[in-house]
Length: 280
Image (cartoon, rainbow, N blue to C red; front, side, top):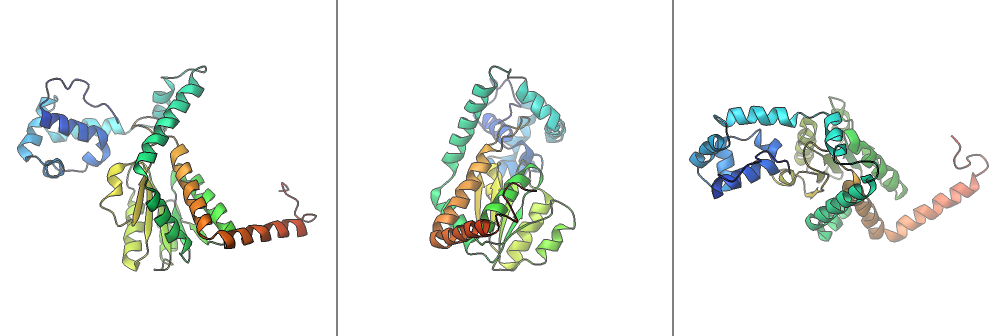
């Protein structure tokens, strides 16, 4: 959670509630009206309107301008913000502590029945379409690699632009969609979820924003902890969740999966002289 209001000593309980909401969901707040904030927090619009002057701004527009500039942080600045609190000797311990905190936070938000539900959706799908933009591409590749061994067809969708439609045109009700949505909701993600909803195809989401778990058409959504806004974001927790899904799918089709892997072993042995392991 980013600290946007260093001095809260003069704020009323209602104003503290608004400040806490903004610090927890700064990017969502950028696109909300005062009325929407008031409705979300169960207070009057007048209370929200008075808040801006209490924290040193003329109005919501002035605050959003400051927030937008603060949130426009480059990858270099994110890394610099994180590295500024470390040195070579403390790096292993600090990172371990951060990872443990991320894992604990994620574990508290992840229900085993939801993991099982998502695994069942994937295992029963004709094909799994995966949207994994940016750094989440490695997670998409891992899913495709592991699940292909189980006999599950996986297609990685284009990261952006109209090429995404080349995959969506083939989407059917018998398929499933898995989207990674980190930091903010991309237009591509909105299009994917809309298309999936239109054809009746179940969608799954892995995000690092609690608010994105709700208000979408995703059948199951997971929220993973990756670090605060403006910091280097870890991929440890989404990786662990992906591996949980893979293993859960394997357990659901245990005999079939083991037979596939046995056959893979036979193929390796049969063609070892022509296709030795490790040869490019």
